[in-house]
Image 1: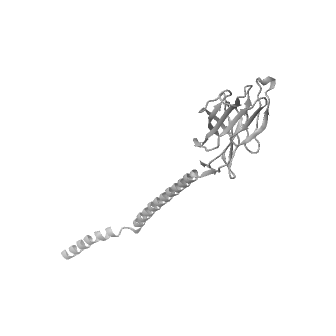
Image 2 (image 1 turned 30 degrees about the vertical axis):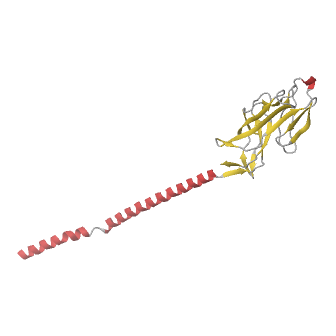
Image 3 (image 1 turned 120 degrees about the horizontal axis):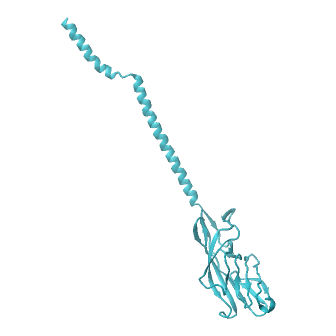
Length: 234
């Protein structure tokens, strides 16, 4: 009897480790599936993050792409206020806007209405310059994407000289503005004469008062020619 009790106790003792080791297969499968799900979820998140970062890099690279307007391109501006040989002083600034779209290939690089700024490089009224009045203007910058982009363009010069019939010459492009502009009506009092440049040299508006001073009224068009390529960040 005693031997049977010892044998039974020994069997019970040995049964505990076996029970612990023989965990149900279903539990092990659940743990494995859980681990696989976590690993898969982490992989998907990493892939999604990499995709977003790649798209962001592409967007930034596209934003950095630029358009180049070649040298020699004509840029016509519309004056925001009047300037003149007597009205203005050297160093005065003026503002305006692009009068018509500026193209770079088939793309519109600078749309009509874009703000511009310039400087009166020289202004000499009649009586301070032998031979007549002089007005020279320069285009300095174009506002693109919220920033003022410097512009390298040839200055435009206007000169009124001579007696009797009033003439004007656009020295900036070396082209005469139609030769004789006209005579001031009423003995040289208070008339205004318009002018336009030909031969693709650009368009402008100028008025000559009775004393032959030069005036470019507000909303006059002036065409500048780029002397250096203009690169614009998009």
